[in-house]
Image 1: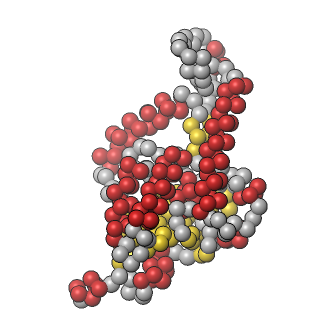
Image 2 (image 1 turned 60 degrees about the horizontal axis):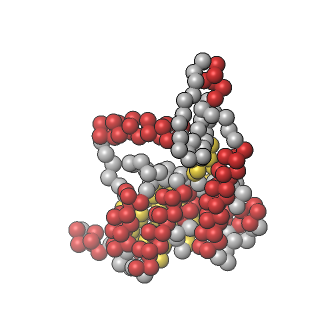
Length: 262
């Protein structure tokens, strides 16, 4: 029985679940670079499957991970297939486009090709509390988007320009990776809306319906099994202190202004 087990074809499945962010435990290049290399090194039959379940997050990490996947695919002459689970939206769809073929469930959430960013303004709140803001800078725009100062029209224009630039890169990536497959007009595909897998197939955002298990058997035969590559889970006690610190850092970063997310 042991010999029969080892004769079964093992198809590499790289698990990409969660929010794209720089913090530990999230989807980012720092935590996944070695996993990507290992998964493609194991793809001796020329196939690697991406198991995607992500609502998006950092555009930088989306771009870095997708580029690393494409590089590994080219270096190993591997065909990449992405399977979207519950959600492959925004940055999650960015990752899916690193594949040569995209599969999803008819009810998967797909798309959301856009950029969102925001923050809070506390200038009225501190006035009511009798708090005076004392801020000293060198550089005209060093305190741009300060949440304790009134919002300026030029700051809004600045943020919109940044977001438009990110959106343009996102759209170019989708156009390149889905070249010849998109059937709907770009105005409806790139307006930030998400859709179900059933409509995503009609518009060309995905190629067909499918799931991990059926795809593994399609590639390797009925006896094939997935060889899963995912980060090791830390214990709850190991995660708690870091999570609290990261939460505080996230709040501090948010107070500095707008963070763009895809």
